[in-house]
Image (cartoon, rainbow, N blue to C red; front, side, top):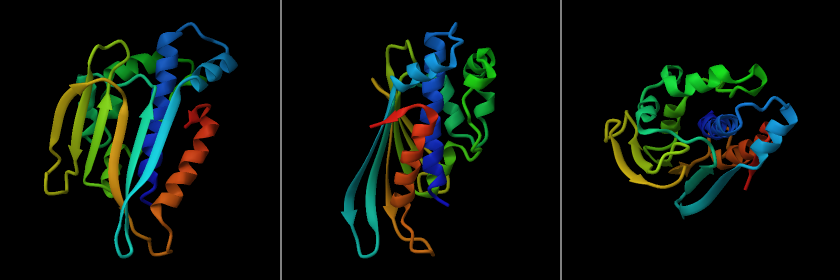
Length: 193
């Protein structure tokens, strides 16, 4: 199910908010206060119809969160499937968190799964406390660009992509499942705009 890769991106945003909330208030022990603080940070999901073909629709999906962001040295973990557990900066923070507060990260399909539905992803991220934002263009390792990554410097945390929404064998469209995943985010104590 290709929509699982979108769920992975949304969960990454939720986890980034958990990490930021903990980093900014490391002494927090009250679960309700933690969830309230998490709700103050937003995840904005925009889904715009870009063009329509015979059976297929091209969509532009943008996910923006107010999470912890990533430092340039952490971005290497996006390009290697299953490598997020090697991110020492993130692991150091997670080890300090109470068990009930720790990010989920349980889907296990990773950021690379996004290349099931697109050949290029644009991402802007700025680590909490850093001065600069880094913009990446990440290309599908199996595509014509062979997994190339282009890097620039700017200021915010956003993931964008365009994908073609063609019906699967059951006639279901990816966009319907994405909208369902967005609605389910509320159970993670964050608001989706």
